[in-house]
Each structure stands twice: as structure tokens, then as C-alpha cells.
Length: 283
Image (cartoon, rainbow, N blue to C red; front, top):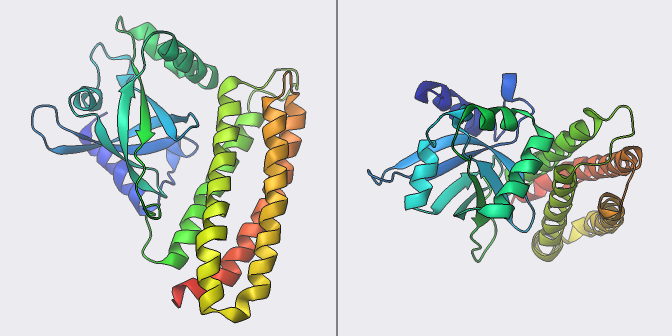
């Protein structure tokens, strides 16, 4: 894509913390910053990604079916340490190019979710690479793209809402007949979301809630309610996990579990924002 077009996407992505309009409204995109193979200067590119669980995501070096690998791919071959912006988080990652069967299985999952990947492969004689981006763990809290603790909680919540909405859309798309089995990539998406939600609630239980309890003893009833809601949501997450990992799960069954989780989670997130953002912003 032309650099000016890329820059428009980058600016919109950063301004709206990952939310895009137009043709990219329902796309999963990250901003990938690589180090120039020849120049050593940083280059940021919007790239589509696939959730893959286990603290990694997958990106595909399609370049729209071009005969040449995209610049960002050549850069990460020379410098595998990259920076990822998700809209909610910014983190460093280690890029690993998948080979052989691992690459083929990942690309097959991508085509299952979007036939456009197959069209790109048909346009070129090169084997389109698939790259795993492994988040590099650091001590301390995650780097949330927000200016305050109150804003940070809203940014993370909105990211969870957006991801769950994408999963619901994927479940509804092309499955209205009810007979098609759940796709492998959709299962991965659901499990990745479940793990992200679990990590968020665990961080609150162990870090944010004790901090607020010490600074604001009057908030004890609110925090107690939120902890109880975490337990209920964890049970719903486990129900969804069992559903999407079971053999021959009916799409309607999975959709019902996602809807149950959506209703409970939205009520929880809204209440938490109403009660905690004023306290966090006052710290």
C-alpha cells in the first residue's frame, strides 16, 4: 500500500486506539514497527493478524499477492525484535517465521476465515510467509496506551468489547444455516479472548483492587461485588472454553454461550467503569 495511505491508517488507529472505519472497520489490525534491514531506522506498517493463543499472534506477508515480500518482512528477517501496537497495548515481540507444516496449517486457518488469503497466494509464485510474533515478557504492569489509570481501564475494556464483537460477528457470518462446524480459527479466537479476559481480571484481583481497598476503604462493597462478578464470569468463560473445544459443537450452542458471556460481561464492565474510574483518576 502507498505510504500516504498507510499513514492515514496509522493516524486513525492511534487516535482511536485501534478502532478503524471504512473497509477496515471489522478487521483485526496491528501496527507493526520493524527496524530497516539496510537503514536501521524504524518503520511502522498496519498489518492484519490472527490470534494464536500462548502469548503470540500471527501475521502474513502477503503484500497483496505481490511477487516480492513486503518490506516489513525483509526487515524482521534482519532484525527479529519488533514492536506491536494493538490499540490497547504496546509491547515488544520476537518474530519467528513458521516453516513447513506449521506454516501450512496456519495459512490454512487464515484462508478458512478469509478466502482473500488464498487469492493472494494464487497471484504469486512465492510461498507467502507466516510469522509468529511472541510477546517478550517484562516485569511490571503491561504498557497500556492511556494517560491515566482511569483511562487505562476504559481502554482495556473497550478492547475486550471489540474483540468479543468480532467473535460474535464471525460466528454469525456464513453460519446462518446452523450446519457448518466451528472453524479452527474461530476456536482459537474464542480461547485467546478467554485467556485475555482471565489475565485482565487476575491483574485486577491481585493489583488494582488491593490498591483501591487501601486508599478507599469505603469502596469495599463495590470491590466485593466486582470480585463476585469475576467468579461468575470465570464460570461462563469456562463454559465457553468447554463448548468450543468439544468435538462437533453446534454453532448455535457456541453462539448461545457467547451471548450469555456478552450480557454478563457488558453489565460488569459498565458497573466497574462507573464505580472505579472516578477513584482511579483521583489517585
